[in-house]
Length: 135
Image (cartoon, rainbow, N blue to C red; front, side, top):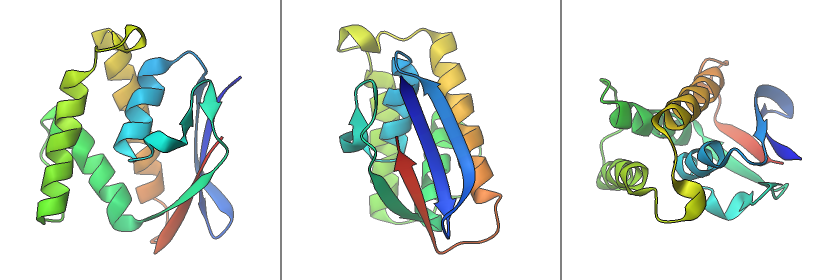
């Protein structure tokens, strides 16, 4: 059992991310960056889908860049800046529970995979909405 995250544009899959049920670093970071913690059902996603627009995905990628201290463009408004700050705080604040004591390599691998997933969505043809299925 594991997580199978698929991004759809007009019912056509454009990006896919799969990882094991016990990859807690990946599931913690992925669901946080997509602001979808309610969709994380432990051993696998809960099968629900959520609609995102281009700006949502761009800002999720920007939050990762913010964490990595890379230059990035973020749509400037208070909500997005607060989200970036909260995201950074979440990354630095992990470790409160047994399964969230992640090694640096686990964190780096998760960030790299999530960044690649978001990039493949953003590199697809322009879109107004994207549906991400959390399975």
